Amino acid sequence: MLLLLVANSALMAVYMGVGSVLLPTQIADLDPVHKVSVLGVVGGVSAVFATAFNPIAGALSDRTGRRNPWILGGALASLAGLVLLGQAGTVLLVGVGWCLVQATMNVYQAAVTAVVPDRIPAGRRGTASALVGLALPVGGTTGVMIASWTADRPAVGYLVLGLVAAGAAVLLTACCRDVPRPGPAAGPGKRERLAAFLSALAVHDFRWAFIGRALLVLGYFSVVGYQLYILDDHISLPDGLSPAGAMAVLTPVSMAAMALSTVVGGLLSDRWDRRKVFVGASAAFAGSVMVIPVISPTWGGMLAFSALNGLGFGCFMAVDTAVVTLVLPRAEDAARDMGVLNIANAGPQIVAPFVASAIVTAFGGYTPLFLIGGALSLLGALAILPIRGVR
Image (cartoon, rainbow, N blue to C red):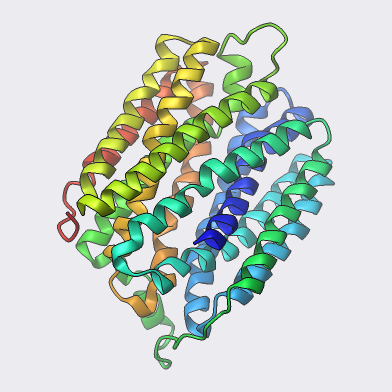
C-alpha cells in the first residue's frame, strides 16, 4: 500500500504541477492575449490522448498479465515528454509535448490503478483506496510546490517532475514483484474485443458510478484548471503576492483538507460498511462551496473555498474508488474496466477546458464558471443514488 501511495503521488505531482502552474504559466508567456482560449484548446486536445490511452493500456496490461513493464515504460516515456515540453518555444510544441505526456502518463496510470483490485481484498478496499486517495494531496502539493518554485525556469520544473515519476516507477517495480496473471481468453475478433472493452458500461451499477465520477470531475476541473488565471484576473490578492505564490499557499491548504477527508472517509466507510452516503454527501458539499468565491472574490474567500472544496473532493475520490472496485463486472478484466472508468476522469477534462474557456470568454468573467462547476458536482451527487449493489 505504501508503494501504491508513492506511485500515485508521483502521478498527481506531474498532473497538478504541470496542469495547474507550469503549463498555464508557459502559455501566458507565449500568448498573453489569448491565454484562456489557448489553454482550453491545449488542455482539451491533450485530454483526448489521456482518454484513449488509459483504457487501451489497461486492456493490454490485462492481456499480458503483467503490470510492471507498463508502469516503468509509461513513466520513462513521460520523462522524455516532459523534457521536450520544457524546451518548447511555441504554442504548437507545447501542445504536442503535453499530449505526449498525457498519453504516456495514462499508460503508467492504467497499470498502477489495476494493482488495487489485483491484490487488495474486498474488505480492505476502502482503506486501500484512502491511501491511494492520499496521492492527490501528497503528490498534488509536492507537484505544485515544485512548479511554483520553478515557474520562472519551466524547463527545470518539467525535468524535476519527470524524474519524480520515473523514480517512483523504478521504486515500485523494483520492490513489488510482478506476479504473472492469466490474461483474458484469446481468440475474439476486433469487433468482439471492442464490445467487451465497453461491456462494463452495460452493467447498471458500474454505469451510474461512471456517470457520477464524470460529473464531479467535470465540475471540479472546470474551475481548478483555470485557478492560476482566476487568481490573476478574478481574486483580489494581497500586495506582493503573485498568482504562482498564491497557488503555493492554496494548494497545501486544499490538499491538507483533502488528506484528512480521504483518510477519515475511507476508514469510516470500511468500519460502517457504508459507501454511498459518503460519496453522495461529499459530492454535494464540494459543489455547494463553489459559491464562496462568487460571494467573496477575495484572498480569504479563496482560502475558505480551497479548504472546504478539498474536504469534499478528497472524501468523494477515496470512497468512490472503493465503490467502483466493488461493482467491477469481472475480476480478470479489472485493469480494462478500471481503464474504462478512468475515461470518467480523463473524458471530462476534454470538455472542461473548452467549456470553461467559452464561459469565461462569453460572460467576461469567472463567476458563471464557479456556478456551473458547482451545479455539475451536485448532479454527480444525485447520480450515486441509483447504485444498488453497494450500501
